[in-house]
Length: 57
Image 1 (cartoon, rainbow, N blue to C red):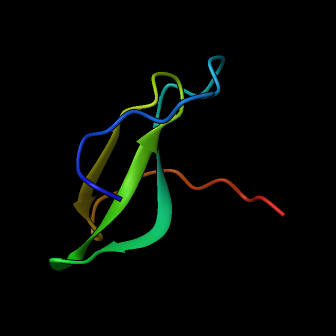
Image 2 (cartoon, helix red, strand yellow):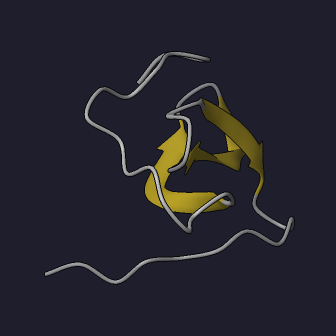
Image 3 (tube, one colour):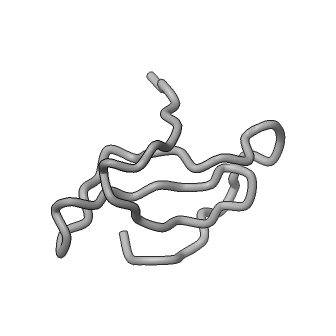
């Protein structure tokens, strides 16, 4: 993943929050990637920050 790129086919209702991915940022091991599922924005935050999680199987 590269910084600040948009996810296509994103979910658009009821999820206007940042959700963690399970991927650590390769050049900053204290950060992980997250995505806002209402607009598709992908960024990274410090792992100590509070974001939401979604279980998928």
